[in-house]
Image (cartoon, rainbow, N blue to C red; front, side):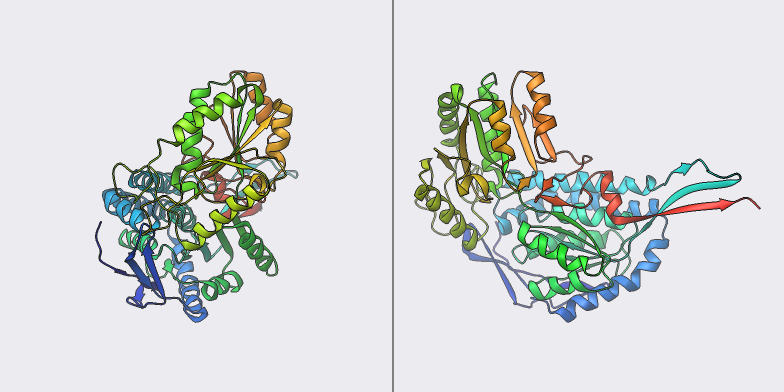
Length: 483
C-alpha cells in the first residue's frame, strides 16, 4: 500500500480546481499516520458554481440521443474495469474494507453501469387507446434537469456509480458531493467518467461538508436530490426539498433481521449470517444486525455462530489473511463502543467481542461482537449500530419472529432460513422490508434488481434497476388529434 497523499479537487464546468487544498484531510483508518488524501472543504459559492455549470450544460446534454449517452457510460464502465485493482486498493486504503470486498464493490459498480448504459435503448413510453375518435395517445419521457448525487463513505465506488450512471443516461446533468471521508475514491470515479468523454459541465464534483450540501439541497436549479446516508439527514433533506417541490430519492438506515426457524439448515444459516453481519465491518445499511432464532435451535445456533465468528481475523484490509478491517473513523468506533456499553447496562450479554483487539492501536478496530439475552425493546435491537455487532433474539415461533422483525422503524432487508416453503411465502408476504432473501445472505441484491426498502429505510423511486428511471425522468402524456 502506497504512502503518497492524493490531492483532490473540485470539477466544475470541466475544469479541476483547488487541487492541493487542505480543508479536508483523510487518513487511513487502519493506520492513522498514513494521510491518504486532501480535498477542499467547499463553500456554498463553490457548490453554486457547480450547479450553474450543470444547468448550462443541461440543454446540450439532453439533446444527445439516449443510446449515445449510454455509450459514454458504457465506456466509463470499461475504463473502471481496466483499473479494477488500482481502484480497489485505493478504496481499501481510504475506507478500510478488506481488498476482496473492495474488488467486489468495484465489480458491482461496473455491473450497474453496464446495465444503466442499456437504459439508453429502454427510455420509451407507452401507446394508449383513445376515448374519442381520431386521437393518437402516447407517453414520452424527458430528463428532470440538473440533479445532486450525495453519496456516503461506506460504498464510495458503487453508490456514486449507481447514481451518476442512470442520471446521465436519462439526460440529466449531475453535481456529485461525496462524503468527506472518501474524497480520493470519489475523485477517481469522476475522473473515469470524465475520461469516457462527457462534455464539460455534465458531471461536476464538489467536495465538502454542510455548506456545499446545503446549497445542493436548497438551490432552485437542482430538480432532484439522490441521497444515501442516515435516516436523520435523509428526513431533513426531504423536508427542505419539499418546500420547493424538488424530487428526492432517499436510501437510509436499516435494522435487518435474519430469522432462523427450527427446520432450517443451521450450517447454511450461520455460513450466511456471519458475512452478512460482519462483512464490511458491519458498515452497510443492508447488514444483518438481528438474528431472530426459534428457541428449540437457539443453543445450536449460538454454538455454530461463535465458532464461525472466532474464525474472523481483524486487521488492515490490505493483508491477505485479514477478513475484517477497521471502522471508518474515530467517531464510528466511539459510537459502536457506546452501543455495546448501553446494551450491557440494559442486561444483554456480550458473548464474544465487545472490545478493541489487542495490538491494533494504529487504527479504528473493533472485534466482531455477538450480543445475547437481547429483548426486542432493547436499544440494540431497535437502532442501527452500523458496526460489527449482531444481536441474538430468541422467539417461540414464526408469528413471534415476524412481530419482532417488524417492530422497528426500518425495513430495508430481511432473510429467513427454513425448509418449509409455506412458511417462507408467509414471511415474504408479511415482512415489512423491501429486499427479501430466503435461505441466502440478507444483503443487497443484483445489479438489475431494485434496491430499496420500506418505512424509514427508503423514500422515492428505487435505486438500481429500471425503477430508477422514474426518478430521473418526468412523463409527458401526448394527445394528437387527426385533422
